[in-house]
View 1 (cartoon, one colour):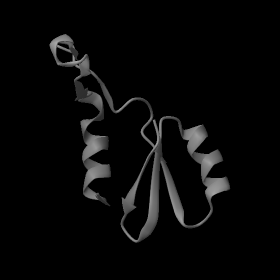
View 2: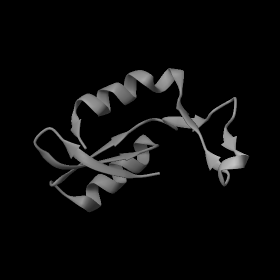
View 3: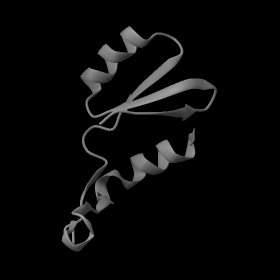
Length: 80
C-alpha cells in the first residue's frame, strides 16, 4: 500500500513498506517528494471481528501495537 500525504514543508510524502523500495522510489520521484518506510505493515485485520459478514464483508483494521509509534510520527508530521 502506498499513501501520499503532506509532510512538513515537503510537497508530498510517500509511505512504503520496505526501506529498499523507499530508496528506489525516491530516486524516481525527485526533490518534491519524501519517501519514508514503515518497515512493514502499519495496520492489520482486527483479530476479533476482522470482517463484518453482515455488512457486505466490510474489513476492520487495527494499527499494530509495534507500529503505533511510527503511525503517531507520520500523523504528527502530516496534514491530511
